[in-house]
Picture 1 (cartoon, one colour):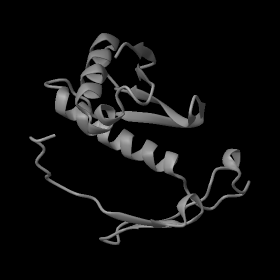
Picture 2 (cartoon, helix red, strand yellow):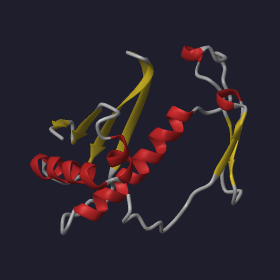
Picture 3 (cartoon, helix red, strand yellow):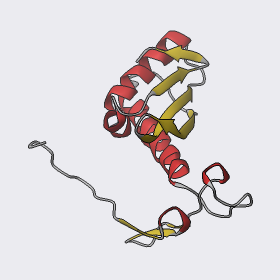
Picture 4 (tube, one colour):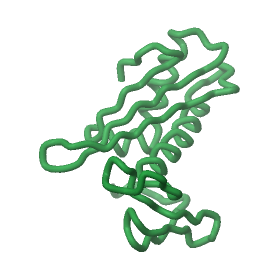
Amino acid sequence: MASFKPVYAAHATVTGGRDGSGKTDDGRLEVQLDKPAALGGPEESTGTNPEQLFAVGWAACFEGAIGGVAGDTDVSGVSIDATVEIGKAAGGLALQATLDVTLPGVDDDTAKEIVRKAHGVCPYSRATSGNVPTTLIANGQPVEA
């Protein structure tokens, strides 16, 4: 990636893995981590897990991408329900994701096109392309990526 020119870098430190804690170097985020019960963690967890953090990060990034590709279309009030699942696959554990995007007041065909374009430019979507099976939904309609 010879043409990569960083404009921002996030730095976080985790100790203890899924049963530990994580914090950013600027002190803005500090979280207790717990394995989900499905992975052997406690039934009454007080911490978060990497899949939840990934879902929040991807949804936030994807909404930014929507704003960047929407052109003159009013995309105010966007809502993204992101689901990141971890499960067994050949060779170990793997992820799959669903991004269910609601674009209020936008017709379904336009919403699908915006979501398709956003998926093509969102850094999270690009990073996971070919590695994390992703289902896209726009205003309740499936989107062909």
